Image (cartoon, rainbow, N blue to C red; front, side, top):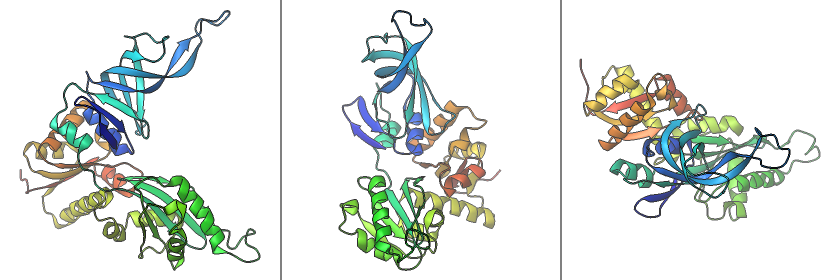
Length: 350
């Protein structure tokens, strides 16, 4: 999440992944104020206009929060409250409104009190990074942007090496130029580019891109160990030991290591882990949890406010807390294990 402290009470925020929305859910409470863009139906006052028909317009409001919840669509939060300020004179102050917080859309959060956990979640040091993953061979290329544990894939690109486009002679640099154009539209500031795939095509692309406008200011790394390209290559990389070695300090590498350690303890029948909400809650109350990983599955069958309170108590005790989503294999694995797993400092009995 991009965050900037404006004053002691106010912060400007841009959520970049699902994890950031979970963070906002944990930070925003009743009594806070959210400033952002939303839409509202404005009643028409024209002659002959239907009295029940209105026009939906974009407005900027300050909303005094009364309730916040995770929407059924996981990539947004629903905030309900009363309008304190508006840039549209047709919208009356004090009226009730519901606005959605979404990935990539900036908001301003005003809090009377920022707890230590709030400050850690919003302003604390984040695991590096964001990566543009490029899985290429002479036949196809997959491009995905990995932020935290959230993966966004672009449509697969095909070179047409054996098709009509290059029916006379295949020129790989023509394909590289297409890939460069796609990279230019996908890459963001501070992204690191990771190129992999079978054969030597990955190295040739790396050389082609070095010095190009698409790669200017970005670290480019070409790595071995992944023998597939395209979308399949992206998923293979994310599940691999190669990923953990290449992205050592990244969030996804840390989360993958935690899950693998949990499964290793399960197989060795060492009771130094938990699976599911109830087990993890009890372990946290005992002060035994060292790190935990949760997905949106944790909220199924549980009171949402209770789950949020549990996560914040864990964070307050110094537990490493990681959220994951279903765009990557690690998120699916956590969901299949009850929505939350943890590593313990010591074994619990009884």
